[in-house]
Length: 429
Ligand code: UGA
Image 1 (cartoon, rainbow, N blue to C red):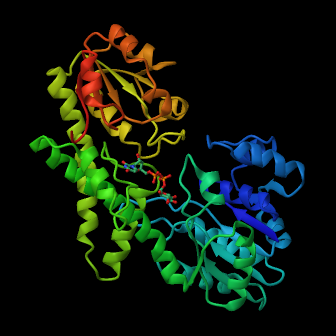
Image 2 (image 1 turned 60 degrees about the vertical axis):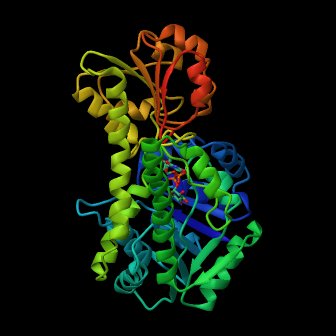
Image 3 (image 1 turned 135 degrees about the vertical axis):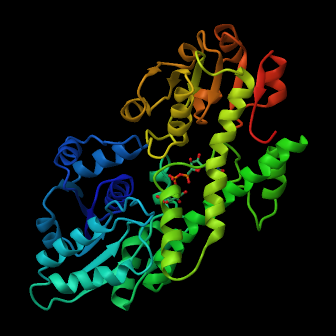
């Protein structure tokens, strides 16, 4: 099929590239000229394992191209996916102006039937607004359909997730739209759930909010474990063995970050309130998440007593491993608070250093964990990268001023680290 994907962020770019890999002809469109110029040179502007290889392959076989020209892309495509940003506004609601812009551009340039599919994460009832925008901006009476097709890929494993989704959700209001979307996803041989548009929109917000709730729940349990001497890792294992609960997303730590969970939680709260329902549970989820960062800093204070003048070595800056994304990373608040208290910060991240430099100033960025450890008063682990999990602890101990590790991701076994002579504090154990 001939497809366009408007917006080349994590979701749009991965979707476009993967659609071309499963046989469709795809134009990825963005109004950011620098980004498109880079993509035209076969360079991926983000760190996402495996993406660049598939991109190169499909550009070569002419199934994938990049453009800043939305007009041309609309004319050349049967189906147009909207995958632009929906950033948070001050009040927590999603800024939908990019969606509106793209929808009106599509309408103005339509020359025949088009299926317009929203892939961006949006509050319920956005589909209706997109339909209205299209009708308003159409030059003549051309038929079209609007559909919702939320995306569930995770950063860091975006390519794998796109080819191996647990489910594909399509929210439609016509059989024609359903058939087209089924055809697009056919090569994936996956479970397709067909719903109305509003339900599909809610599935996305509810899924992200539920996963965030799971994380905050285990973090709350971690705090109880810590107070009574239980081990949250064991508790999570025991809970997760129950199939109804499942073991995923039960890792206690410094809380969730990234551009999805914090933003989508706020947006879901906002739309719930707008619809007249107080979704207070989600407020608690947010509070627990904030508290985790506070607890982590408290652990560093307890270990070092006075923060002022101390050197704190940070291992991991990205909001999770296998990504260079720093948006809403817990590391930002944690490092800024420690700096405010007068700490000197040295840090290492395998991929996120360049992006971290844009948001975290006065940090000594190091090339490896050992450079960070040298003469630091303690080590604080913020992201569970493999490169960090596999550090040589004996070497680290020799380099540190004091053998203290505060582990915000529970990557080590406390007893083993303590055996090596470290003072070690994890989360909830
Ligand atoms: C999340 C969802 O998992 C995807 O399904 C969704 O498509 C995406 O948001 C989105 O809406 O675009 P992502 O933000 O890439 O994906 O990352 P996750 O792997 O979900 O992790 C989010 C945060 O939760 C990270 O900071 C991670 O460290 C934290 N986390 C995750 C925990 O603290 N504990 C866990 O057990 C799991």
